[in-house]
Length: 107
Length: 112
Image 1 (tube, rainbow over the protein chains, first blue to last red):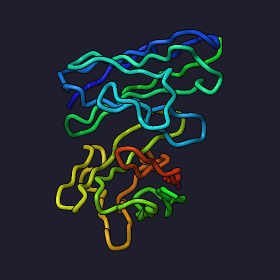
Image 2 (cartoon, rainbow over the protein chains, first blue to last red; image 1 turned 90 degrees about the horizontal axis):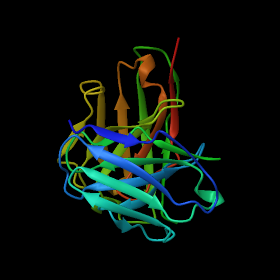
Image 3 (cartoon, chains in turn orange, blue; image 1 turned 180 degrees about the horizontal axis):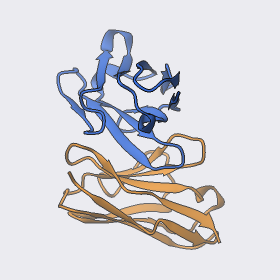
Image 4 (tube, rainbow over the protein chains, first blue to last red; image 1 turned 135 degrees about the horizontal axis):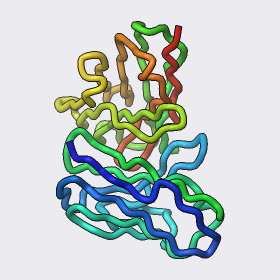
């Protein structure tokens, strides 16, 4: 099983801020990592796959980086619609695993 | 419209069974690997099961292995999850998901 440590669990920020969320794996997964955004009462939506490829329709203020064991999701200029919970997920091996989630809240 | 629509959730007693369905539309369902993912109330996401596009390869989370069965009918553009021996800890919103698209989820509540 690949364990994932996502941090922070809670991030307080203001509109316009640059925010960074980290995801660390217990073993290397190459670039088999996705990032999802979930708003209350809604299904998760794919933001980034293959660690750094932006899903079609996702704003360019979102970016992903990393490979192996350490990955980062960056939102360059936080907008009001970005306040949500973010999850990383590895799809390198089974069982698939998710990070614990990072809630981005208004400061 | 490209979408996944789950159904079949509801209230069931511990030890009971439930069958979830997921109807796909707007894309070539038979070309896509599919998963079931669940989310307990107020908790994070938990992967449950995977099935390959042809149905020949299947994986389960340890927490459901031996109790849940995933299947698909590509002719009907449908994905299924048969859930037996349900426990209180199986209470969650269950999502069907491809690599890029998720359904809206269906709530399963296991309680006496």
